[in-house]
Length: 201
Image 1 (cartoon, one colour):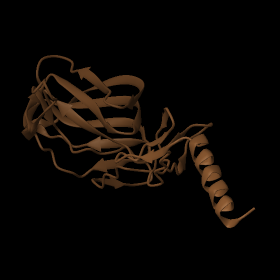
Image 2: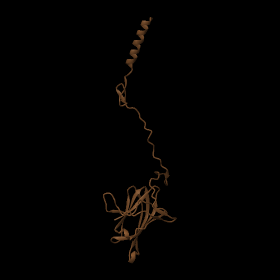
Image 3: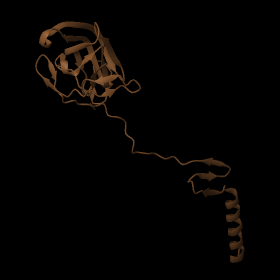
């Protein structure tokens, strides 16, 4: 076979191979077209990471890493005392009748004392509003001001045995008409990274 015939055979052979293969084109959107079928590219985004859970709870459940740490209590071995401000600002979303009696706070050592005082005014209802995480509320005691010189009066004790989660709240109607409150004692415990606030109207 001469060189001319050999070149002719190679050109014809490569043309038939090229005709047998499907056309491959790449568009501006980076989709790959193979013949008549279209398949988008597989893109893996490695920036996302699964949430890290660091604080085990009893049983098999887990809760996220602490995200709320109120620092407005004084803690002793058998009680905690609220030392934050009494904002007395309107709260409650669509229901603006509620006043904040406390900043977000927590229960430590089994009970939390709020020294409300007569100067805050008189109220008919109080509310424990969850802010973050969860709080176990067993009992709430409301000590009223009564008598000459604001001496301590009767105490209303309410058994709750409830857990606040999400946007949940516990509401307590006070005995009698509008009452001046001397102090409120909330019994229970607050989980790590959790908080609730005290409101009234």
